[in-house]
Length: 327
Image 1 (cartoon, one colour):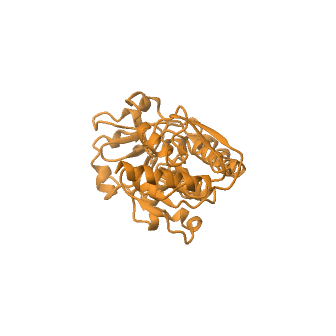
Image 2 (tube, helix red, strand yellow):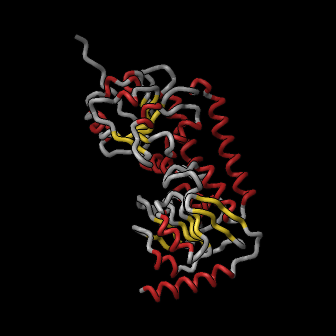
Image 3 (cartoon, rainbow, N blue to C red):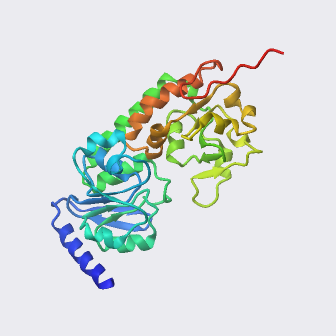
C-alpha cells in the first residue's frame, strides 16, 4: 500500500507542475506555510463547507467533502447555479489520503475540515494543501478569513476582495436599518439539550455582524477548542437575553415545550424567539459567500418581527402560543 501511495503522490505532483503559471504565493497557516505556484485548476475541497467558497470564486472543485443533507452532489440550493452541470466526486467520511492522490489535484483545501497535522503533512506531498489560517482552530475561522485565504491560493485575490466587501456592505446596511439591535444579546441554539454556539462559531458571527452580541457567559463555559456548549435544563441563565434563534429540529412545538424553564426566559415572554428551518439552519452553518445572501434574505425579516417590542407579533415559523383561559 505504501508503494502505491508513493506512485500516486508522484503522479499528482506531475499534474500540479502543469498548472498555469502565476507568481508564487506563500500562505501562512496553523501548520506552517504553503507555497503555491501557478493557478490551481484541479481543486479538491476537504472542508465541509469549502466547496461553497470555491464556487463563489467561480472555481468548480473536482471533489468535495459531504457534510449532511440530501442535496445533489453535496451542494445546497444556494450554490446549485454556481455548480452548473459539473459533477464533482463526493467524498464521504474521514480524509482518505490515497483516494485524494488518485484525483491528482493541484490544490487541496482543508479549511473547516478537522484536518490533523499528520494528514496535512501527507496531503502536502500530493499537492499544496491549505489548512485553517494561523491562530485558528478547526472550526473558528470567519467567512472573511476563509474567502481571503482561498482568493490568495487560487490567484483570485481581487475577486475575493470584491465578494467580502459586497457581503459586508449588506450586513452594514442591515445594521443601519436596525440600529436598536446594536448591543442586544443573542444566541443560536438547538433544543432540547440545550446546545448553544459560542461567539467564534459562524452562526454566532452572523448575529454579531448584524449588531448583536454573544453573551459572555457562554464563552466562559467552553473547554478546549469547542465551538458550542451544552446547558443543563435547570440553568438557562446564559441564554436569558434579547434573542434566541432556534435551529432546525423535528416536532418543534413539542420539543420546545419540553424545555421546562423556557417560559422563564425573556425571549419566550417577549416573543423574541426565531425558528430557522432546515435550509435556513444549513445556510447559517455554511456561512459562505453564497449561503450568506440566502440567510440574510430569510432571517432578517424574522428577527425584525421577533424584536419589534411587541410580544403579540407573530414570528413566522414559531409555534403560536395558546392564550391562557380566563380565571
